[in-house]
Length: 152
Image (cartoon, rainbow, N blue to C red; front, side, top):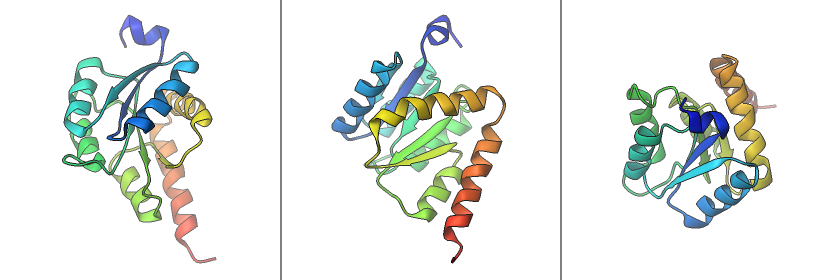
């Protein structure tokens, strides 16, 4: 981490919808976080590689390079493979959540989401990753999905 990120958490929001990026920015900056924005996959990858944020909030459904493809590229790149990815998307189906976790995401937030809860989610994810619990967090989310998919 560079000295800037030690002072403030840096969050990269990759979403093609300007209102969603604004919602994230306003709420995360209100909590003292630094927010970077990208309106599409290619510029998101470029920003992630250049600034190396602490966490990425990644939309799935974007024109051109979608969120799944962006996640794959981030995880294949030495510079960005350690950055936790939280998928932020309108796709609420359980199989889409599972795909996000399979693609290397550590968490999944469905739109519409409560923007007030975003900063605490980011802090929780970063805290768990810092404590070496990234895989455990993913396993918990996968287990929750399995439970939700099983007929009751």
